[in-house]
Image (cartoon, rainbow over all chains, first blue to last red; front, top):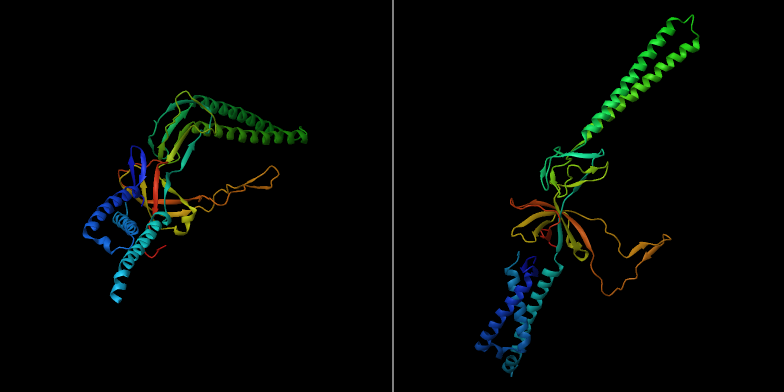
Length: 67
Length: 294
């Protein structure tokens, strides 16, 4: 929550880094699920992808609590 | 028929379940980052004592250097002792003069009383009154000597607190004036943190709640607790006009910024190698303690 990352004197909240990480992980997850044929069972593909992204991000935030 | 319906509804239900989960996670994230009582707007603060000499004069000696740690009572600098030593001598001379006068008056009074048949009553009264006057003068001169001695003592300026000198020390030869501060000291025992919390978060801040403090650029966290919350801040939208009537700023009500309330935090745990510097930036987060769930 209170963490911040300094890049050459500019401070970013750690949430920004977590968002980028979560996006990468979700991108990988998308490819994996696509190959497994998961999306045949899905109603709206984009909605599912966004929901997955939020859940993955939430997971990262919980894992890094106290940073 | 039934199977077909389930086959059609299945994807919708699955998607909605995941979306609901995402909404719950999103709410948690919003609460965690936006509503939780924490702020990046905090600072280390300390009491600053301004040292002003009690007597004027040239500085003849400076016994400390910039940023030095100074004990309570340690001598900081000395002001022109010669001048105040001379003033003391002068006062003592005046006292001697008054004493001589008093002795003479006493002798005269005794003599007049002894010759009471020859001397008029008025003269006796006059000589006794002179004794009393001279006694008062001696008392005044004695006080003047005490004052001169006090001034001489006050030429040595010593530290009223344990603390750090700030970087503006007086130099030998500077002329200092009574009551005009020449250097400031940071009280070493008064370090604390002020967190400026948005007023929207105040309902989650309670006195005695534990607090984590992250100083900008430090790897280790400091710990403390909420000591007190400010009882008031300035109303920025109101001032008094020239006629003493309230002058209220007509604010635009759609976009409003939360004001900041100072919350004073007492430090409990500080890493041994951490150097306190008043003014450093701190991120302050209130830890919701057990049984204090907001």
